[in-house]
Image 1 (cartoon, one colour):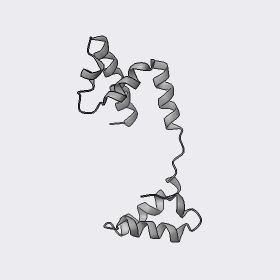
Image 2 (cartoon, rainbow, N blue to C red):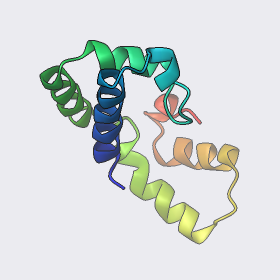
Image 3 (cartoon, rainbow, N blue to C red):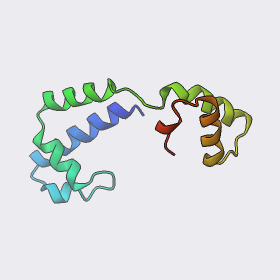
Amino acid sequence: MDVYLNKFMVYFEIHRRYSDGFSSRRISKEPVINLRKVSMYLSMSKQGFEQMMANRSDRNKVVAPYEAFVKSRLEKFGDTPSAQMHDWLKQAFPICWFIIVF
């Protein structure tokens, strides 16, 4: 399932249960919802939630430039430990090695 669709469903389910008379604590008893998320979603309007979701999709991904390299290495050597991958990244990208954190 799409991540954004899942978040929309959680948001609307929280609001539906709250309007049905459930407390925040009782809503948070669901396995995938914690109390902080319930409180955050209840304090947001529908427009605020949609704006938050739009802003999240526009974020830059720090490791995006290295994705093809990591994927190709993992296809060749599937059981590579993270320390070995880190060393390969430092060799292939000597200037930017410091931003890669495993």
